[in-house]
Length: 392
Image 1: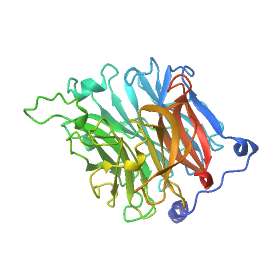
Image 2: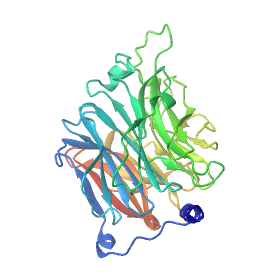
Image 3: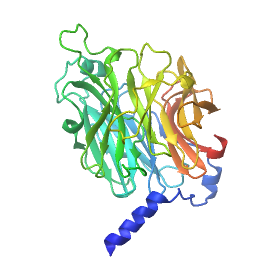
């Protein structure tokens, strides 16, 4: 009887639309909030935002807490703050994965409605090494990039310890590895419903006999990993292995379209192709790409930076990123009415400096964006902005 009741509840979660939030005066009046301010809470800098909405309607805002500076390596924790009112106010800072002197980051969270759990993938490397050293192959396997998974069964209040899944998802000739960053995807329709998909990127070692070091951007590639059992075991999905220097897929983001396909959008890291954004689709639940990554020309205003995509329930496909092609500044939202074939910029949030971002659907009428921004420095704060879906 308990199994039947749980099955009915899970089915209801999967099929029902997003519930409207509990009406409160603060939520109605709230537009922006600051879950992270650099220099506070024991951290020099907060970077790399990622956000999801749980089945309880809680908004989870993950970030990297960089203790000793703004750099990408060193003593870095994965931290979290929770909001029960749609991103207007935030609970205390939690350390989800402690670096302990090493680097833990690139949070890629997803809410799994079948298990009513939050699944979090993160990346790791020794705090004594840099991305360049890793790409050149100058580090030991213990120092190099590794991949971990954690789960929360209590709405993000606590998480299991990080569990290493590197050997399942990282081939031996790969050097760099990064999950996300930004939200992952729980497939809710189609033949792969229930699958968890995490967009990721990597670099590979140069071929034998090459004079390259491996640090060249052409060795970056995009890939995905997926789980069909709620994050217990993981498999390597598609791998973009062109390595020709024309399109260098790097930090990736994904969403499920209404027809069940996955849409992937990627940073083109110093490729020779025109534009800085690449995209593709998968009809196989991320096992293969329907076509190779290619330039998305309607996003040429975007600089070289991480970005986010979100398919709004009963609404448009949205994309967020800075909107000055030569600078990380002026965070904006683009809309697509044709499943990612073309995008149109519909709103610029402001003209301040801005960099990484992640999108989340707060409720049926509201979208949230969690993004890095500042007035004199790009990484002064991580801000949460609520936007009406009807205005996008």
